[in-house]
Amino acid sequence: MGQIIKIEGLKAEIEGKEILKGIDLTVNAGEIHAIMGPNGSGKSTLSSVLAGREEYEVTAGTVDYLGKDLLDLDPEERAWEGLFMAFQYPVEIPGVSNINFLKTALAEKAKYQGKETMAAKDFLKLVKEKSALVELNDKLKNRSVNEGFSGGEKKRNEIFQMAMLEPKLSILDETDSGLDIDALRIVANGVNTLKKDDNATVVITHYQRLLDYIVPDFVHVLYDGRIIKTGDKNLALELEEKGYDWLIKEHA
Ligand SMILES: Nc1ncnc2c1ncn2[C@@H]1O[C@H](COP(=O)(O)OP(=O)(O)OP(=O)(O)O)[C@@H](O)[C@H]1O
Image (cartoon, helix red, strand yellow):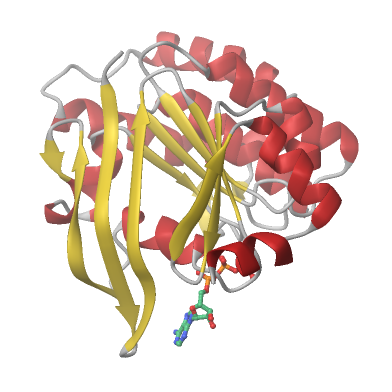
């Protein structure tokens, strides 16, 4: 199966402070990876750097994404190339309805790829199909993006956006924070349903609980800006039971 992303020796800093200290990570098509790790280890920094947030300065390393130099692309280009990011705190966009936001996003992506914009009829069909996946009701579809949405509704909405955009690589940052059990199941179900042979997902999470629903092929532990351990789903169970201290000691 093809390689989606290969991160090598990635170092990044913010305000002169080095946060990522040499990340190596390869994700292939058809895989789900989970990244865990104690607070402040650099998990959100990694997703921000991959999204292309300007505050972070990459000081070393390379990121190959579908044969392109990811670090050389603008944030918009990264999205159009099929990179989807769901952040811990989704942004609100007052005055832009959810549906119009997606219509524009899909039209821009099609334009970038030199394809024709989807016909209105097909777009609405897609909306119906994909929103059913996360049980997003009609009212939320027409409201301004994330404005006044509850935490759980924002998360569902993100998975809805993900379903609509059909990304090649989805990076979900703490998608389980603020989700109740039912919402957690719905989100996980969405992620599992969207899993295909030609795409991949990276889930950043604190909770083994989410990994009961989204079963990862690999679990990585990020600590102090580096991946210090990689295993399968059993590693997450071990962490749940024993915490991180033993690993950190082993690493020291
Ligand atoms: N603007 C900033 N200036 C200085 N340090 C920062 C800034 N933003 C983040 N950091 C630091 O970078 C480190 C990594 O933060 P990051 O949010 O990536 O960790 P995390 O692993 O996602 O943590 P958590 O599990 O708590 O969400 C932290 O020590 C944080 O204080």
